[in-house]
Length: 507
Image (cartoon, rainbow, N blue to C red; front, side, top):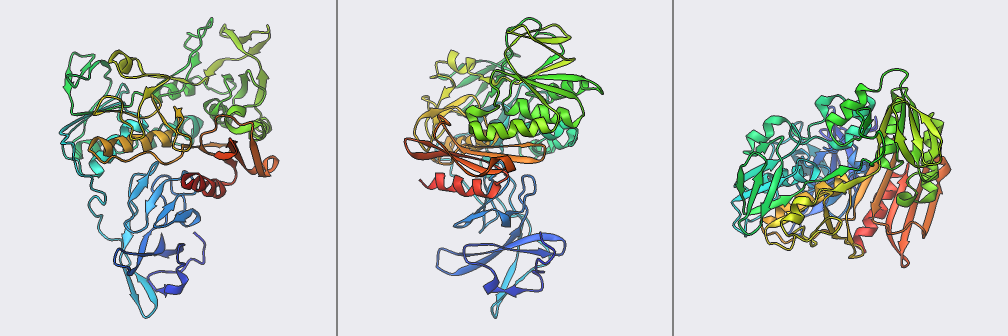
């Protein structure tokens, strides 16, 4: 917020609040924004809302307003400007509202926020669901549980997770937590007491061993059987660990859980040499985090250009240059084994190291669904509402394969925000809302303080158009399929990626 932001309690001219835009101001020390909109009777209204995104605190007035919605410039969360309700992940908490008074062409805002309202979005339970089981404590499972309570579902709700604790923000593990910039206390998505306060039965450290869709029953590894009216399968995925000599050693790590991150940190003492196998987003984020701990870091991957398949050659080279300028070395090759002192490559070369982190992607956890007779093909197949071929059984997150809203092609997306959005969609649809996925997939990365954003789904990065200067870390790239833009990527241009994402949504 700028120093010259107006004091909204003193009043501002209504004409200063742009139609179709936002006016940033303050109420005391609080950043607050004003928005004009028209209600169902045609009367003009003015809302005063928090100007700070409830996800990680981005300033919403620098985002994008479309109609009565505002999109966050950082991670593309969405809020209703009439109510403050969070309508799109990764935000779920609403914006606070302040009372406004419009008189003689001036808008004045109250000095304190209004009491928190009840749920702004009520979804009728037209399917008569009384028992919901959510399998999976990742982004999709969390979002399904949170959304169900937010839209007024009052029936039985059980959340099952193999993890030892309720859901955490996994996006922080490879970034701020692994680098040491964020403490463990900041990892939980919601305080532990929230689940008890909202009557959510959270069962940690449990595994589902069988699913009977005819009986609508889920069997757990302790012998317990859970009956359900609706089931959300969000088992996520498992990191790929290659079957190579030495890769079963304790000093070879993957990164999926808090325990994984803690194990990496425990082996990352002063003077440690680390090899990261794989140059995808997890591999690069781990490399950046370990460099921030002043480790000697080498990235080994088959391609000399990281993320070329996801972001294209131009942005891929930019990221390699960024890492190299921060002291990371890149070696082109394939791992053949690990002996505790060096990573052996297929060409006979060796990369000396003390610890190995594997970032070679993930495999969807589909065994339970497949054994139950659900359709599985590189993921649990679902329709545009998130429902499988069995009524009342939904799937979301890394393990689900769904129709891409832009092309109709079946895709599986391993992105945090996408998993949350799919989980929330499953939640309202198991009640009978019948909503379809329309948002393009979206993900973000932060490396050495530089933001990388991607929206949409690109089957290929061959047909790409660059806008700006990749070398200056200031560019966006459009990817086309059959002449039509289906995805956009950017570095250092958060607002522009947001605008182009909105264009994808409106096609």
